[in-house]
Image: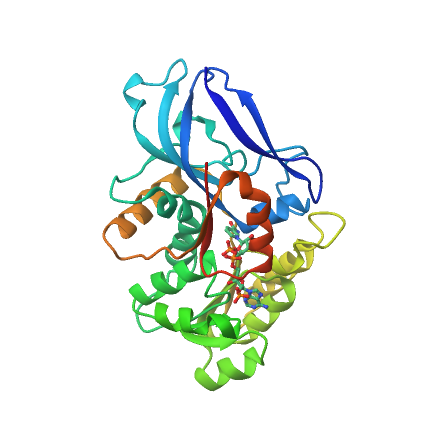
Length: 334
Ligand SMILES: NC(=O)c1ccc[n+]([C@@H]2O[C@H](COP(=O)([O-])OP(=O)(O)OC[C@H]3O[C@@H](n4cnc5c(N)ncnc54)[C@H](OP(=O)(O)O)[C@@H]3O)[C@@H](O)[C@H]2O)c1
């Protein structure tokens, strides 16, 4: 008999409860994972407030990602999988001591990578890698602006861009400038005049901007682009607690993306391109995670961990995520 401890967000805005139950045997095609570590993502904050585009119904168990060991498998899943160390992009349901996950979504985790580090890089690693190499296709000699360079995704974007041979400017709050500098980027205070400072540092404009903030910021980012530059939006962090329809904050953002693309088609964009990225838990994401784990294993990618907390402190972890005090990722340990 396996006892499962899990976190449940009961209703919009909370409460966030710790519950226990007995695990059922895994269904056909699934595996029961004993969770070693699970990450806290900004998407969990959106889901708590009911503002995530793919919002689960309340009550639900959050947890976008997990790392652990396979303890039991359902019908049709090879028995050799039992005992293997794996990761999964679960979207929800990762904040459990044991989690049932479709076997096809599992990715092997190299033994050299510690559990919290591996968990911290599932969602953010796939996102940053796909943004840098598949959407923006950063190349040597480019100048890249990373908004939120001290954050979970941002800190990885900075490193991937530097590894590709780019110069990196990174916005962050002033207290986090030493951390941004340490990563190798030139910090810019987002509470100051970001546009003026970027123009000072890169008078010809920047080649790539990664923007997680939403419509207003996206427009400013577009105006900072050099000829043939690209702005890639991948979030609307500034609207996570905006009440109302969960799609509403994204409409002005997507409107801007389409507007700039139309300008491009009309030949009025000076070669500049506009894009928006959303992660998909598919085969491509799993292949990307294999590549990301290899970068971590070989020491080419550092994964900043802000804090490790026991699973039962998930409510406090969400509050810390909102207050944004740490540098890097918050990880929950069952
Ligand atoms: N599209 C996708 O598939 C996808 C995937 C993953 C994440 N995301 C989105 O990406 C965003 C970031 O996620 P995360 O996990 O990296 O969050 P995070 O670790 O909390 O990082 C967010 C960063 O944003 C910075 N920030 C806050 N206000 C800012 C401003 N006005 N200008 C510039 N930076 C600002 C914060 O800097 P300070 O700490 O210095 O204040 C913090 O470093 C979230 O909106 C999330 O939903 C999207």
